[in-house]
Length: 484
Image (cartoon, rainbow, N blue to C red; front, side):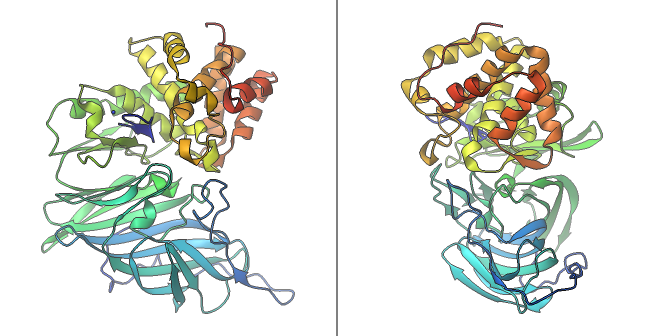
C-alpha cells in the first residue's frame, strides 16, 4: 500500500458473483465434501476460534478451518445502496468443529447451509457464528453457503481509520487494509488463510463492475449487467477489491495475459491514464529483478473519492487514489503497487507485525525503478532518506511497529533502508538472488521475518542477525552502510 500525505503507503497512501438471495448455487459450489476417514473412537467437537491469533488484531480471521475457494455473487443497487449476496465457500476443517466463525460486518444473514443442510447462525458484532447440523471432522472438506443482504458500509479499523465498502456518487468502491472484505461478503478475514476466488457482480446496466483476476466477460439481462472475474492464485482477503461506476476502460494482452485498466470518468484524462498505461512496462522491469510475474492478469484502477487517500495493491489490479497524479505522471506509485504483486500478494504475511516485508521491499522497488528510469540512483535515494528521516522513524522499529504505526514512515522508509543495508552487506549478486529466491520459494504462500533472515543467511553464507536487529528492531539510528 502507498499512502499520500502524512502517512506512507498501504500499498502507497496518497499526499462474489452476484446473485439475488433467492438464487441457487452452481454444481461446483454444491460439490460433495471429501469422504471422511474411518473413526477409531468417539470425537470431541468444539467451536473454532473467533480469531486467527494475530497479536496485533486478535479478532481478525478465525480458526478451525482453511478456505480453499470463495464464490461471491452480489447484486448492488447504488440508488438504494442495497446489496444482496450469496457467498459459497469450500473449506477443510482443521479440527473437529461443532461451529465455526466467519467475519461479516453489518449485513443481515438470511440463511446458511453447510453441505446442503440448513445450519444455525448467530451474530456477535462482526462475527457470524455458523452451527452445522452435524459436526465437521478434522481433515474433511465442507461447503458452506451464506445468503445475506443490507446496506454495506465502511469499517473504522484500528490502523488506518477506515476501509471497506464506500457508496459513491456513481456506484461504490470496496477496498482497504488491513480489512475490507467483510463489508461485502462473509470471509475468514486474515492473510494467513489465502484462497482462490470467483466474483459475479451485478449492477445497473451502463455501470462497470471491476474486481480481481482474469475478466470472464459480462452478460446483460433487462436493466442489469453481471460482470464476472476469476482469481485462480491464492489471495489474501484484504487484497480483494471492487470498483463500480463509470470508467474509461483500456484492455489488451501482454505476455499472454489479459490487461484490464480503468480510470474513473470523474478524473480528467491525462496523467492517471498515462501512468497506469505503463503498468506492463514497469512489471516487465520488476520481473527482471524479482523473477517471473506471479499472476494471470495485469491492470490498475484509478478512483475519485476523497475518502481514499492511498493506493492499495489489490491482487492483479491495484487501486490508486486520483490524488497520486495531481502533480503529473507518477510511475513510482505504480512500481510500488506492482512490486507488491510479488511481495505482499504472492508472498503474503503470516502476521501483521511483519508488514515491513511488504512495504520495505515495495519501497525499495520504487528506488530501483527510479534508478532504472534515470531519475535518481538507489544510493542517492537512500542517503536522502537516511539524512532526513525524523526521530520517530528511528524510535519506531519497523519489524515491530505496533498497531498505531503499522503504516507509518518507519515501516516504509526504514524498511526500504533495511533492504539497502542488506544489499550492501551481501553484495549485488547474493542480494538479487535473495529477492528472486524469496519470491520463488514462498510463491502463493505466507512468510515471516525470521524466514527472510534465514534465507538471506543461507544465500550469502553470512551471519546477518546483528544487521537485522539494528535496522528492524533497534530504537536508535544504525550507522549508514558504506556506499555501493
